[in-house]
Amino acid sequence: MRKTIIGGVCGVLLLAVGLPAMAGDKEDVEARIEQHYQFWNQKKGEEWVSTYYTPGFTFAAPNGFFGEPETIEDVRANIPNNNWDSPNVRFNYNPRYINVAVYGNGTVAVAHYYRMGSTTNKDGVTTPVSLRASDVWVKVKDGGKDVWKLAHRHLSPLTVGTLPPPR
Image: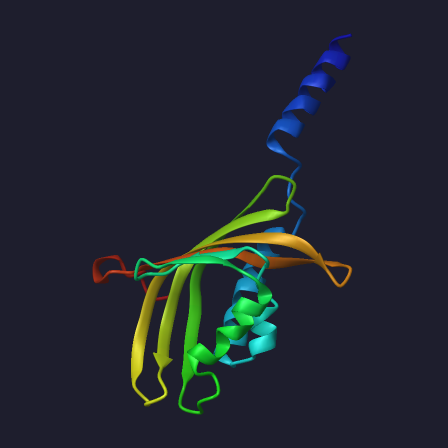
């Protein structure tokens, strides 16, 4: 009887907090974030778009703008607005100090990190980029396999007094 009660309590607790994440989920999300920025830096539009979870991707930009839920077509249509076709436009975004927590049954992850680097516009002017980023990633089936996709991103300015130490 006692074993049954203890087993039942453990089962209820496990259901209440969710199943543990699969081994490697944290590392998989970290790798997906790195890949997302590699695609962006290399201006690989379709690959970059493939990292987004749609419909429903949302974002909060550092200028206070809140993005509406977007479809994959919305994300794809935004590529020309970034002037990716201009040979002068360059992105050099590097995620630093990535921290990931995987929740529930291993299908949702929250990541926070610094997005450091620079953007060069179509006129050749380079602007440094220093932002704090918080992401929500969801694990979905894509082509029959589990893939992490970006569901939400929040970016905020990184002020001079809070820059991370060099790595």
